[in-house]
Length: 120
Image (tube, rainbow, N blue to C red; front, side, top):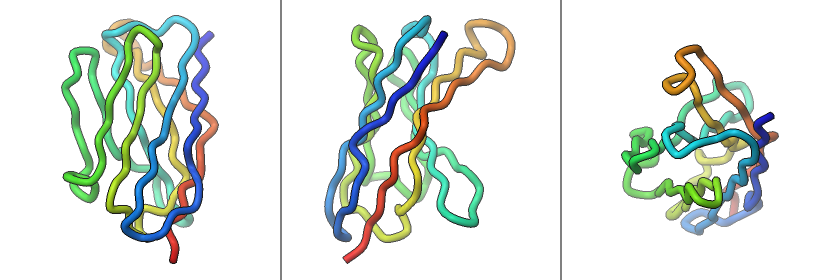
């Protein structure tokens, strides 16, 4: 079974920084894509950033230049460094792993979420 546990969320002032961590366990391999999603109240869940096994990254336009996703394949962890935080970044952030490409069928797992609140 695959499990994902996020940590690092909290309350931060605008312009501040936070680093989210996601610890994975189970049958996750380097080739699997991992990412961070977020969902604000009344809004749909959206992709924030993703990273492939060969460290190729993709970011939402709203966070480009401010957020950095990284991963440690040996430890099965993915991180999201968030700088220059804005109030609109306030949301519950969820870690995700996508095994679809490897398994040939849609297979995703989610963490429980960690709250990020940006407020002065």
